[in-house]
Image 1 (cartoon, one colour):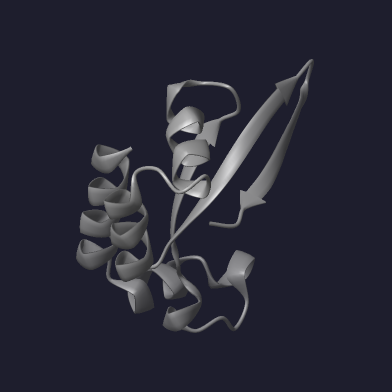
Image 2 (spheres, rainbow, N blue to C red):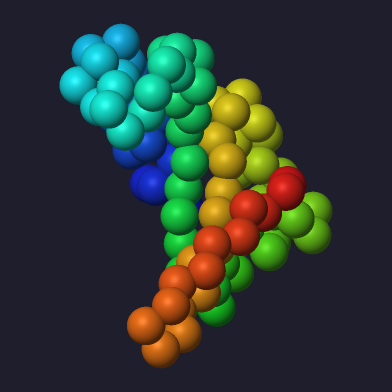
Length: 91
């Protein structure tokens, strides 16, 4: 999980947000650069999901603090036959 968090934080810093939005304005419309957020997506019931559960349960407090400081959102992906559902995880 630490690696996921640090990677998204790094990529977020490298991304030219205005150019990204301009390049995809036909899809994104009139969004502003501050609409781009850092997020980690993990599959439900995989190892990283356990780490998220640990953070929610009060364990791995330093990892949760880092997620808060870096303003990272977490999402769980559930795969069903030909359908994916995504759920935001509030820490």
